[in-house]
Image 1 (cartoon, rainbow, N blue to C red):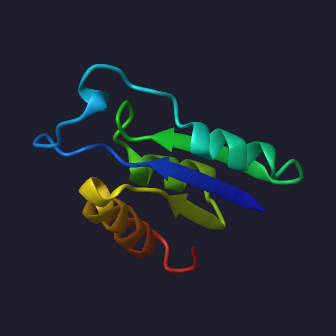
Image 2: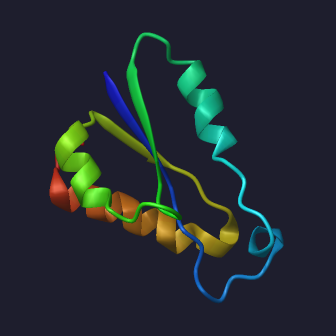
Length: 89
């Protein structure tokens, strides 16, 4: 199974510790390590905004995302955009 984990970008008005440092998406790295028999990719939208291109190239079976309350709408948009690109995901 192909799994794509997508880290959402924060809004421009979001303030917090991430203004001073950007951590790698450890939550997805740990999940990927727990799926050794699957093909897993991680897309960090903070650095690469091309969700559509990644979905077209990788053709995942599942797309997962994460959020804190400050970016829940960004996470929802990732899932909505994914469904528009490929309703079977």
